[in-house]
Image (cartoon, rainbow, N blue to C red):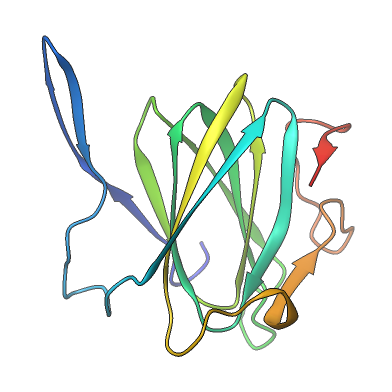
Length: 154
């Protein structure tokens, strides 16, 4: 629904020893290279609210556990401005979501705990706190239908 979002499935190899998951392999059809990785480890019922910036591409995944992933269009000139999409991410499906700049990203932890991975691409320095935007998890303009009405907020 929101232009620019891509769902990516990594390759998974399984045998009697377990699984090997390739989460990223350079692919010129997307864009430039990634240059920054971050992990967030959260407990059940934690909601990491909608946040983002205007220059970073983000490839997000949940490497252990499961999350309810939300992406919100914050581009004022977009036909889907303030609309949101949700995805189930986790170790059960190994999906990744590629999020363009100016789209907000948030997630809610459905499992006992979850390890969430951000893979970032941007020019220049990292858009730290002063250059990021945040949106209240319960902003009535967006009306996200989160799995919990009483989450632990970050």
